[in-house]
Image 1 (tube, rainbow, N blue to C red):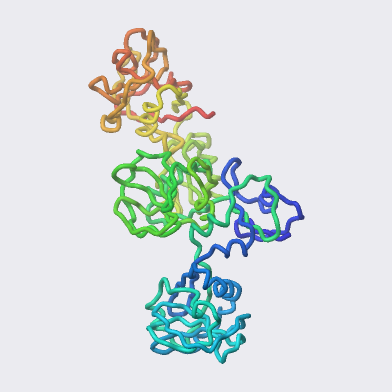
Image 2 (cartoon, rainbow, N blue to C red):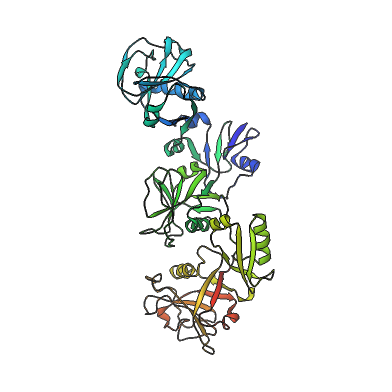
Length: 513
């Protein structure tokens, strides 16, 4: 049997499942993510309501009439519309544009009817079905079109492209006629399913969403790359208008390219309430300064149409994110060579040196320059942290100001380090720390290597610190226990921290699970 997987045709044995189809074409799919199956072209087109007639002068969109009187005409249109492709405009007048002829199974009448501007008619010229034309009405008038005995032959209305219609002449050509895919047609015809679901002839399977960045908003695009770092994203909100992904809410990026939010457009909220949220649009919306355009969905809009709150969706991007942090210089050399990108080593250039920064920092800028400089350090100078689960707000704050939220490595600047004090402190951000409530306060002792942050109960909110020996009186930032939130412990690199001075940059990473 013939089925389609993400638009790719594949022959499968009878009784095959969605899993078999995925494996047959090696389709991108992460276990547990939402899937979509459309039960064949006929089932899908049954719910299509709009069609685009593309001409050499522009496009005209027509919308089917949802009325029982026009139902037979709509069926005939859906059965025959592809026959109009590559035909010329047959004639034009001040009142109408005619396209055809095509052959249908309709029967004509000889009655005269009144037609209004914007109506679309199936006309049997010469009162024969072998010469059926599609008539687009430009102005109110009465005529005998030899129409079938249904709804005066009217099966649709013009929904867009009236200016194009006014300029069409009899030498113009219909390049294509395509259904306009809307969310409601997808939802009515697609079923969320599991990989064990049996397939039938003509089924269409959708497994992932492909996003193509525009390249005009590199910082915001990198935000999206970070969101999709595991090639799947959880839906946090869905409405008729958009699907929202809020995992990185609160991570602000500067405004970049602004524009119309068409169906399939990916945007980042750059200001106001909800900054850092990512949206993908199911319906068209106008532009707004608070939304930066990231790119658009190239494949898999069907999954975004049917996804519900809490669902996970498999995502791919084109191009993929270019991220060398936490690689060695040698690993980055091979990684970048495979992508055709020139590699320039900086800092410690040994093959086993650990990369802690890259210039340019953003993927879309790297693609444009086709060149990347990587800064290496001695791996022994990397500080590795194991976070606990008892201080989520404080851990988020730490990851945000260090850069660990959207990158595999982060950095902190030393604020206080004095020989013999057995403590080191790092600069925080009082503004970002606002609202940092007390959580996971130490009770009897702060252990060597425990990482703490000053909470909102104390004046120096947001300061980060770690002690090099146990202390049963004060936390790592010198505050009483009730002013200290413990977020985790350093499991690697604690000894090297004692060698850092005020103003130095310390590179940090989260322990790999």
